[in-house]
Image (cartoon, rainbow, N blue to C red; front, side, top):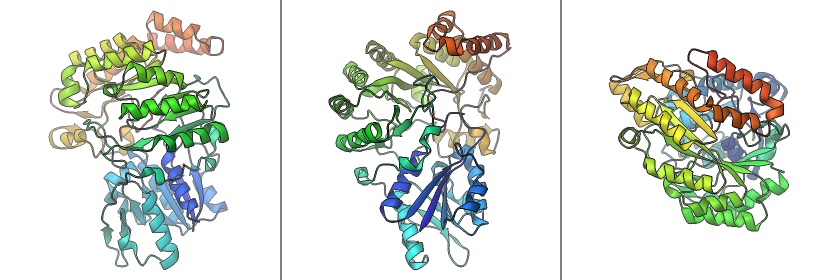
Length: 481
């Protein structure tokens, strides 16, 4: 069967482009089993999706979507169905709310959870029997001949993830995915940025975070398997920068250290890499950061979230303390790594005082990059359930759930949405417009290229009543879903 896998483009999303790695895995599994596969990522394509469909031939079109991109995914499915294709949707939003999409007649199937085996079984059944055994395909939602929507049994998450082939990176327009992370601050126009996932899932249960696809069980690839892909990316795919995109790649400290040692031994440490989604501060020590630095790591990110102990422990339910965060930053900086912190404003029970503590904590930690976000209540999270019962979510338009938008999305208790937005703006102003921070940027390697633009941006922010945040950096949009 010929299968097209598509990723929609959303205007509410960050301007940074990142390889939709899930589609790469799906494509690799299908291709290894004899199916023809192509990938269309609207974020980097030069033509509209419908034009691409008109000049190509596929039997099935699969579209992935996070919450803020679901509308664009529906449009893609509608365009594919109008041309007589089977359609299947999958991804984070579909796993949480599969029935919502099945209300649309142009959606034939929804994949729930990890879909490598699900999609392969579905495609095989459609091709060999015309869909006579759809009821046996775990992890799909579909319609029978009478039009009744049926949800099959869930697919059990597999811990043997070494068995999956490496993502089909050759099907992506790699040269279009510049600045996966700000490794080179945009100075390398020919960057070949790849991402790698060394493990799946996260056992922690922060109330703002949803892991509908990869689950709550941490499942790691072997060091040998990861190293083989790392070697392939560097030597065969000619990667110039790599992002480790796990939810928590350093869950087992010894494994993380061993991977770094092997990267060094193989001479793969000439290509810089970063941790895209951050690291858990309570699974680190100085030796790990020293090994990461020697292995070519340039920047590490940490999910700090809040500078208030109560918000951190009782509201967010983060399994860390402020002292743990301080120690992780201290060790990373001592090892010579750049640091990046992720901070959230406007959690339930927040006050002006708790948000001020977060700003002060960011200033104390002083990472090279700070990413301030306003809390977004994604469906499937504890926060969403809390707000459904006791709060007021301002919009049912999923576009409003992009985490880098400059607006509060809900009200609960005495939390003032306007105050949240003001503190968010204040955080960016106070962090990035400090004299020493401005001087660091002016004296950095991109001084002569971007200094005029940086000065103009700074002037606009000073003159603005609230100030505007710089372009989103670091954490991938949708990382909390």
